[in-house]
Each structure stands twice: as structure tokens, then as C-alpha cells.
Image 1 (tube, rainbow, N blue to C red):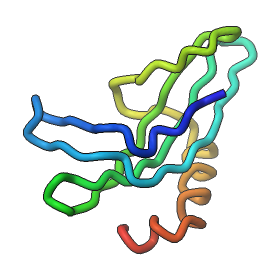
Image 2 (cartoon, rainbow, N blue to C red; image 1 turned 60 degrees about the horizontal axis):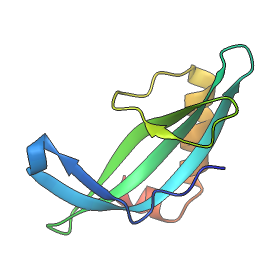
Image 3 (cartoon, rainbow, N blue to C red; image 1 turned 90 degrees about the vertical axis):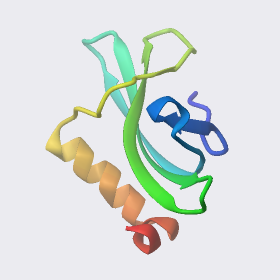
Length: 99
């Protein structure tokens, strides 16, 4: 099971931008033949200056493992999966108010 990242600290640019994950939506991509699972996320980040930002990212784990690892690279997925993820985000009250 994937544990929510809400409340997790976020740092960019060697600490130039710091904040916390305020909200998120998740979508599991289960690749039967690939041996790995991907948890795609849209995260609302509140920066220390009070402003908000959106991050689209993912975590990955091997089948059978419980350890999800941050994938420090842009999300690469199908247009269908990206559409599902964004539609899920649009249903959240926080998403339309920030974007």
C-alpha cells in the first residue's frame, strides 16, 4: 500500500525552494509484465512563502516489495493514464482553485 505524501517536505534547487505537500491525488499503474508498479501523483505544494505550486510525479516499487521509491524524474506515461490522473485531480476542490 502506498502511504500518502501529504505533509512531506519538498526541496528544490539545493534548498532554494522549500515547502510541504498540501494535497495530492494518486493513480496506480500496475505493469503485470514489467515487474514494477508506478504510483502517479498530482501534488499541490505550499511553498514557505505561502504560494502554491503543482507537481506531477511518480513513485516506483518492484512487485512484491512494500518500499515505494521517489522517482526523481518527470512522469512519463500514456496519454490515457495522464488523462485519468488529471481528471481525478480536477474533481478535488483544491485543484481548480490553484490552477
